[in-house]
Amino acid sequence: MVNDLLAGVNAGARPGKRGLYIADIVEMLQALTPEAAAAKLGRMADVRAVAVLDRPEFTAAAEVLALLPLPRAVHLVAQMAEDRAADVLAEMDEDVAGRIFGALSPEVRTSLRRLLAWPEDSAGGMMTTEFVAARVSASVADVLDLLRTVERSRETVYSVFLLDERGCLDATISLRRLIAAAPDSPAIDLARDRTPVTVTPATDREVVADLIRRHDLLALPVVDDAGRPLGIVTVDDVLDALVAEHTEDVQKFGGVEALGRPYLETGFFEMIRKRAGWLSVLFLSEMLTASAMQHYEDELARAVVLTLFIPLIMSSGGNSGSQATSLIIRALAMGQVRLRDWWRVALRELPAGMVLGAMLGTVGFIRITAWQALGLYDYGSHWVLIATTVSAGLVGIVTFGSLAGSMLPFLLQKLGFDPASASAPFVATLVDVTGLVIYFTIALAILSGTLL
Image (spheres, one colour):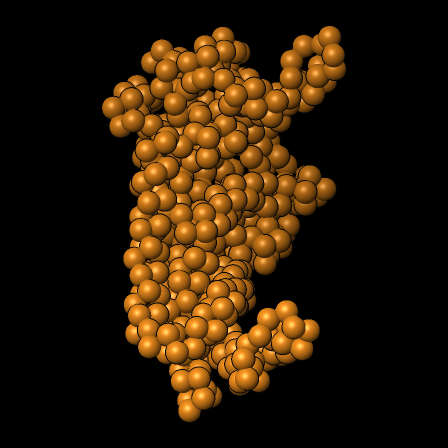
């Protein structure tokens, strides 16, 4: 249905002709107030209004639908793709969603109730129940006749399920192979694999995405414990879900609670609430840095020159930790490393941190030497020891930062938290505190008997 609409709209999208692309309409409605968008949507033809509502980019769909007269809203929801309709209803106020839900036909209510029962980030929450299924004994001609009958009531037709006499999934056939086959040949002969790749409704969406990528699928069957098909997860649904997941992870990694909606559509006080929690935690954590400096108050009083390099030391450790955290979080998300690989990661990050620290330490030593030799700053008679302290401190802190930053995502995943919660600010704060301890411990060892 949506494809037919788009073809008609595309044909008339030239200046002076009728219509716009659906994506253009969505963008225009997004820029309006919900009331204005509802007024325009209410005047659209059903086929165009449904196409607009079916687009995940139309993030105001729930709010706009709630402003329409109830009969009109029910009529549009009944024609939407069921997975999209379930998502929109889940975003609505419970009372409004309940009135719309109650006015739908029993068949639609049953399908939506099944979709709404599963978490949003699971295969059940992503799937659509609009799939095409035929008997395993059907011929190619039988399946093609079935497709002509039901195509307009299905969101997408990427493949056809073949079911055995118990209604369990026996095989899947791609639409491309079906069209190219002889009409009188058995449909089962077109199956690429008699053991189709399937998932259960509880499967996490990241696992679903990995299976679709690994097996080069356009649609992945979702089956119950007995093997009976419940729905399909299409590749476009996975892309939408992964964009949402990636957005959430990026926000968490910046030290912000996931917003859950576009930036400009997030209310002022909601934005404050989302940011204040993490900011307060980080502020309280940074107080430990002040405590660490107070502990070394006497050493700082005797060797004030050491304070000049505290920002350098702390930022280098935080940067190395953030680098390692970013790499490991992404590797975990892509399935490149597993929880059991923590020791392999540690064995890589430990020498890598030492080499990186040695590189920065060398640069720091050269910098102090150059400033002393050129007369740009006088570090005193023990400047060589100071340069050695800074250099050794950088080796220790960058090594610790790399190791701690790489292990923190594993620890969070082991405890059942999202590894993306190991945000860059959090890692930097952790390394700041420990970095000061490492720096002054090395300073005491090298400068004892001279400046300290």
